[in-house]
Length: 114
Length: 114
Image 1 (cartoon, rainbow over the protein chains, first blue to last red):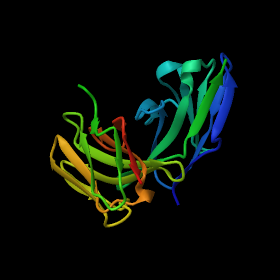
Image 2: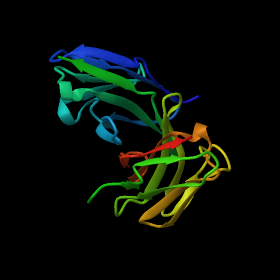
Image 3: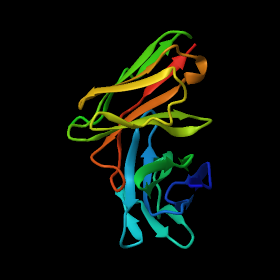
């Protein structure tokens, strides 16, 4: 069965510290991978996406993610977080099953402390 | 472009009443999605349209839920009759394609059924 697992429901971190938000997926078909961010009372916004090519992708706000096919992971990283990065982050996988189906992870709440 | 526009932003209604949520997608986007977000179940795809035609409504929870897209610039999600367990944030999203293209989300409608 296809699934997306975000391993941490909450990640507290101090300002200017590095952070990694983990995402693993399970799929028997080819995938496209996305990270979205949701600020309070807002819709989701795209941070970055992996379609093909280089496994390290860079997104907005200094975030980057690395696709690891052997480990079926797509972890999100930022070397130094800001208070304004406090938000919920969703990993999403679009499966190519003939048609396309997107599955979202349960989300990781990043809380940046001063 | 103003982005995906949803209305109302908040809706409080009594159990048994009909509720209609509205969405205007980004012009030129051929795909429109309705999602529901709850703490318990996360982000769930309810239904999506391609060129105004419903493609996959397998996520619609019950016959009480219905969605229409009469033209390329407008869609509705209706719940009749509403129940307290329908309380959630409902998001509309649109995209140019599916698969390798991200979705653009509206700000959501927070529905409370009392």
